[in-house]
Length: 134
Image (cartoon, rainbow, N blue to C red):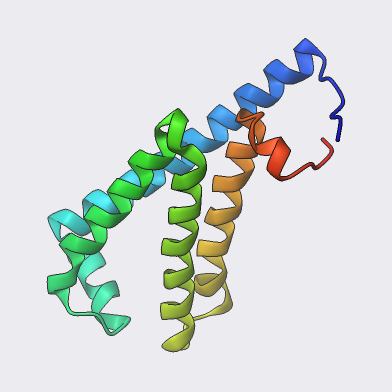
């Protein structure tokens, strides 16, 4: 299957849009991971409200940090997006299990969409897997 060649200006704009989108998501994920590792009281309270013991926070935070690092590394960014999708799927399931609001359940889905959207805009190799038009 042939893909249409992108104009250099469009390619540059899409690349920078993808970088900016990915950077915003990565900053949020790193902040979230660090807050879990340091045991910030609001994060501990939220975790307990989901039914998880506070002792799991460091492991959850480190798992998120590792997945984010894999996502940021260009050679492994697609794997990182897959790992983060799994992580966020667990967040959706946890929120739904305790009956949180629609927004709290949908927020991880939105973050996952931003992860894949930023990657799609900045990685031409992903177009072979997802041949969508831009």
